[in-house]
Image 1: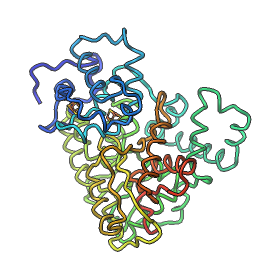
Image 2: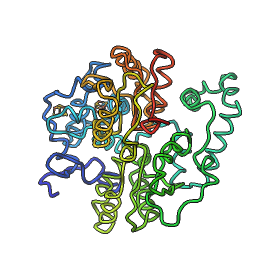
Image 3: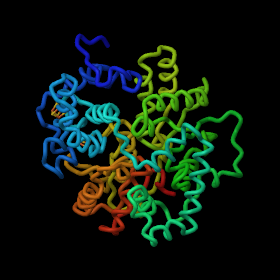
Length: 428
Ligand code: SF4
Ligand code: SF4
């Protein structure tokens, strides 16, 4: 990667920005990547925020052009800061535009770069603090997560809501968390506390945040699917995806390095139940474009990562699910490899009952979007529910637990005939 002209957004903090972005013709610098957008607008109708708002600032083309003009020094951030922040904060990072774009322009990655340069911290302060401890201070995170679990299970959160305290701006996210989480939270660790892990495991299961802490039964379903491969669980580790999206790139690299060291030099596959995490680890080498040693290690780990769809039962039963759809909702990578694999398996199981996910269907917001400031998740989810009702879908399968929790809440509210499930729940 040796570009002739390559301006940067934030020359004083190069380590806080990604050096190499994925493009059809290999990895590119940020400026080169954004120049691939030729403003054709073919992606506009696939973008949920553009369809809702019908304004250029909320379209993929608009977001790319803002970034390009800022890089070329033709657009002063200070003059339009509020609009730019709104435009970037409202992006779902879903990648639907990249799937529709002839040049596969990675708009979601451009938006993230802009957020890093503007110093936007999209999550509410307290929520961000707690989640960032997962990498920075795992013990503190465990302690905070246990406290939150006890408050949720014991009814203290209901009391908080009743007292109106959750209406305070810095606690509003608690309402939404209480709405979407299962009535009783059990950590995966509690489910597996009596399990003895093998000395030489055949696979290493890396549970997502939701499978480890928010809905342990989801992690347990993944665990059962891996049984014949002698699994062990990588507890207390994160892939660094949270830091990549919501924190700093430095911390994302640190989390990735920690995972690489813990996973060791073995050959056992590392299995994840989140398409977001799968795609992120597959792209680890991009994080280390500045270091050959770490890039080699990242490549090795990326070659070991597998998505849980590879371990689904080959002869699953289709009864009881009715008309089925797979929601491709995932960060950056709409209709990605994990989605294609899952679709192939589901086509054999559900045959004509597997409905096609249309180009203009609205994706469910991925990876905690509904907790972000300035999100449009209520409107987006309402459109998603309308799509499900229009196609008379009975079960929507997800590749990520968080999106399934999110959609289930809205389905219960507006279309209780349908339900959302993670794919690992297939046949229990
Ligand atoms: S992102 Fe792709 S489809 Fe959208 S305007 Fe740019 S080039 Fe066209
Ligand atoms: S990532 Fe999603 S929300 Fe953002 S511009 Fe692309 S399609 Fe629109």
